[in-house]
Length: 243
Image 1 (cartoon, one colour):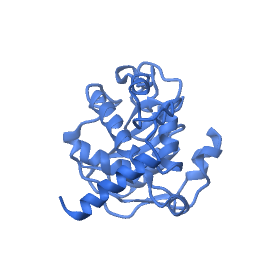
Image 2 (tube, one colour):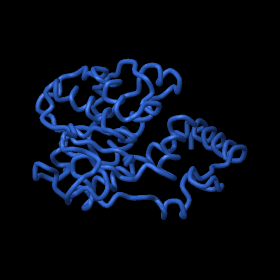
Image 3 (cartoon, one colour):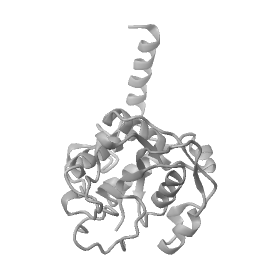
Image 4 (cartoon, helix red, strand yellow):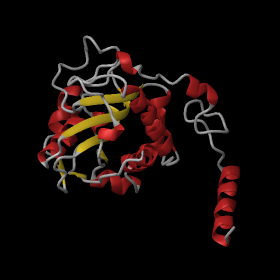
């Protein structure tokens, strides 16, 4: 083992001694997600979920969208409450970067399950064989400067490795107010015209990922930007869905 690797392992061991890993769900020491919190995650059952917006129990009649959801299909892994909400907050605001592959793994599980169920167009909600690349909803420049990283870039890179699909870092985002501070009616207006694709994606079938979907404003804006640069289709996936 090289000296640099030894130093890295020693630093990790020291950090774990000084600041032991705690569960983001219950704050117990040991793991990022303990067995109990993993067992109680509010998974969305994909066969019952709305194929357009990903809301649970919306397969036949969805009360969360009116059929105008912009991505061709949306897959949500979890409900946005309890531990999933803590996971997103800890990654974004507490800089717990080790959660990025955890989020990617949850997304991969949901996508695999969703691949067995149809979207509104009759095709599978997700097909790795029919997906050319993974894109992500980018952070604003202000958010990047504040955090020092783009949390969805980290998740997208981990998901890219998990699914064996290339990453297409093509979306950029102009300044906008924090969506978390806005009501449902203001979200779409706040994001209108704030995203664009910097590369040509003509003919590509893309998977667009984000952390949370509420009204779908971020996913809609990202999808429109990709379609405007020639994408054939855009399917969305989020860790959590608000309903």
